[in-house]
Structures are given as structure tokens and as C-alpha cells.
Image (cartoon, rainbow, N blue to C red; front, side, top):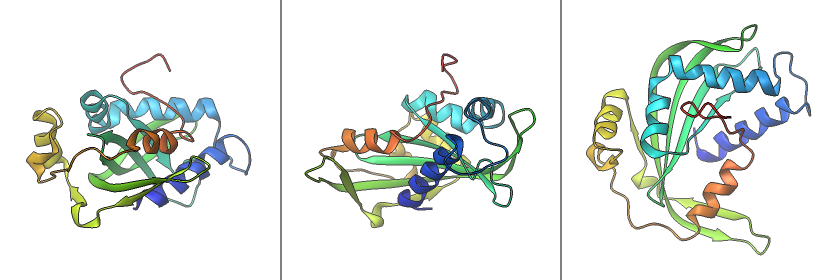
Length: 185
């Protein structure tokens, strides 16, 4: 799933949660509780947050009965990379809990090659598709054990890209912040 589509799904979920469209399961508190409960079922998500610090955890199609529920954890790495872990999950909406994981997690690395900024301040990223990577939980364990060094799975990024911090801030802005290791939010 491309970054643009993940962003669109995150915005759609946010709109559902704040009541701009109908959804029989969604509420802000319920969503936060559900995401926080993912810490027990998704050790990879917890590991990513511990390894890289700030992480976005969100569930694509949350509250939508006919679509698979996809857990996403995304981190911004080394001023140039976006690392995303995705896996299908099952949810019990009555208890606001992630109750299981369906299949194996898949990790995606996208490398930003250039960022431009419009007069209004919006940024747009160009990704180096030849540098994109996809790997599984075994490779993630190697990167985790190497302190988050993605070169152990064949990802070698260039130098940081100007405006990467702005891209990160604008990408994270519509997301609902929930930490799996910091119980303050």
C-alpha cells in the first residue's frame, strides 16, 4: 500500500471518528483503547516504537464492517526513510480490544528522495522506488537487534533530505497519537 493511500485511509478513519460520516462502532475513546490494547498482540509495533521513538499506530478500516482491519505502525527514520509495519488484525468492538493477528506482519521501507514545499507550506515528497524494500518478521528481528540499523536488511539510505521534519509533521498531523509504551496518552 503506498504512502498516499495509507494517508487517505488514516484521514478517512479520522473523519469517521470525529463524526463526519456514519460508523456504528467508532468513538474516539474506543479507538484509543483499541489501539493501546494492540501492545499485547503486536510485539513488533512495540519494538518499533522502542527502537525509533515516536511511532504512529493506526488501524485502517477501523469501524468498517466489510473491510479487513489493517494495523499500521509507521516511523520516520534517519531524515529520509519511512518504515511501516502492516498486519491484519481482528477486533472486539464491545471491549475495544485487538483480539488477534491474522497472518504475518510485513515491513515496508520507502525512501524519500526529494521534498518540495508550496507557497502555502504544504510539502510533497518524491520517493525513490528503486530503493523501496519489503521484508518479514525475521529481517525485522535482525534490524531491531542491530539497534534499528536497516542496512542489515539491505536498506542503505542517502543523507537526510531537506524538509523531512516538515513532511513528518504534516503526515502525522491528522493521526490520533497513541503510544504503546507510554501510558500517558
